[in-house]
Length: 167
Image (tube, rainbow, N blue to C red; front, side, top):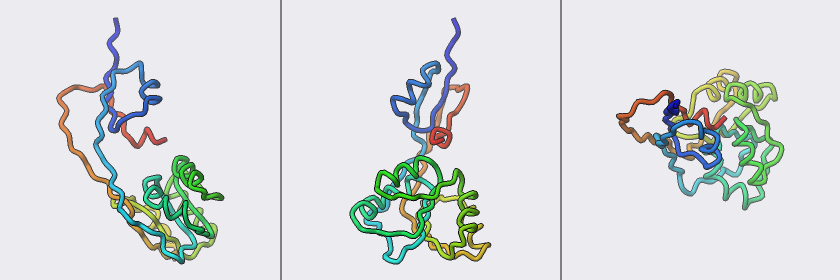
């Protein structure tokens, strides 16, 4: 009898995800948590808005859903972020699969200024590329990623990162 491979998953899985990994012995451990900043609002004069994760959209759901906001352009990274924006009634979203690709799309569209909604541990590519190309970036921190350090005594054959699960 072959033993199941042991995999550590660095977040809590949905039942659908567990079902897909049924051939493995799975341990789940949430190694990060997200804390949304309360009472975040979108400034009145935002014309071009950028989201690089669905976590940056969630704290703004009340603003997006309940107000008659009109943006010239909405840019986002990833399918999940786009789906959430569409759920909140934001149509005509420009989506790319990486922050770097999104930055070049914004440059290509000759945007002069963007409001970037992000977390405390956001990556540097997007604002750096935009600023190097003369685009003004105003950042709005709307969530904080916090680490939950844990020690594991068990041996694992693989570690499945939460970043891979988002793909």
